[in-house]
Image 1 (tube, helix red, strand yellow):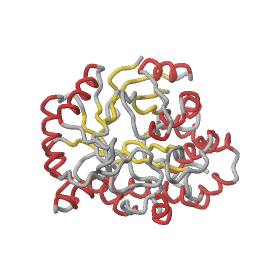
Image 2: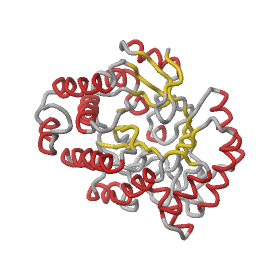
Image 3: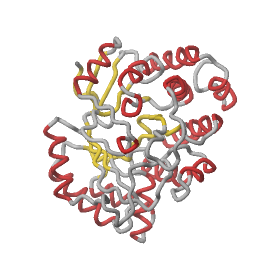
Image 4: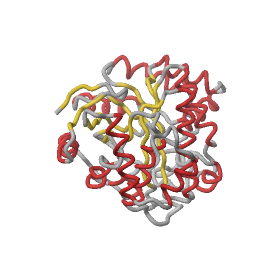
Amino acid sequence: MDTAQTITREKALQLLTEADLLEVGKLADAIRERKHPHRRVTFVVDRNVNYSNICESKCRFCAFYRNDGDADAYLLDYASIFAKVQELVDNDGTQLLMQGGLHPTLTVDWFEELFRQLRRRYPQVQIHSLSPAEVIHVAKLSGISMEDCLRRLQTAGLASVPGGGAEVLVDEVRQEISPDKIGWRQWASVMEEAHRLGMRTTATMMFGSREKLEDIVEHLFRIREIQERSGGFTAFIPWTFQPDNTELGGEKAGGVEYLKVLALSRIVLDNIDNIQASWVTQGAATAQVALFFGANDLGGTMLEENVVAAAGVSFRMSQQEIIDLARGAGFTPARRTTQYQILEEY
């Protein structure tokens, strides 16, 4: 097999089910080497601000959400958000990842005003915020189309859209793990509209819950086909379901399974430049090994992360630790922007 130009769903499934882990890793590493011959491993200094934990979706895999009226339910006011972003700026941060639940009352006006003020106060920070499910929910609450909602948010300051809420892009799986969330075609429609408006986005996959191996392959090919049409994905980030404290529960996917799916992602998604290792869910050691299984990016420093932490997983890494991790694997660490422009090599 040469590159993703020749791979089929059948061949991808065969690699996942029958091929040796190191064989798949070797194929993936060759593609990484071809796409990133400089042996640079990138990261971004960012913060994940969860503006609210109140969510009407109530996904069965989520330990973070609360119902409106719960004792620990919250909605941050603008001043609290600005304080968090100021701390990001004080740490030379350039990316604001802001996500919350599907809040029952927040319309597009609330986000427009927030984004306008953020852009005015912190022009050096890229607003990389809201998942497709949030965009569709806000549009519905506001009585406007998804397209109008995205346009208005972009005008206010939204610069790019993270790929959250993708889980597995197969509706049978989504019905089981998040029955009240948008279907896969709606997720894709938001991404393609964002790309049409000139915004770049990321794509993700949360695996290891209730999906079959065929569903993982289908997810990868659906991402690849969106990229063929619109070309707007900067990176793909696979990560594993964290079952603790969730309604769904179950076993946690292991490191071998993670590395094999990551490697397959690099092979299938030959038309996406960057594959991100998830130290947030896997920890530093596995993330370092992932650099030899197709990953070329270590994501963000994440000054704050609450959603995965709610499931009992709380890996933390400083900027220096990320630099040391990449360097220790024989790569050149580099700090980047959301759009993968290199700011500094170490």
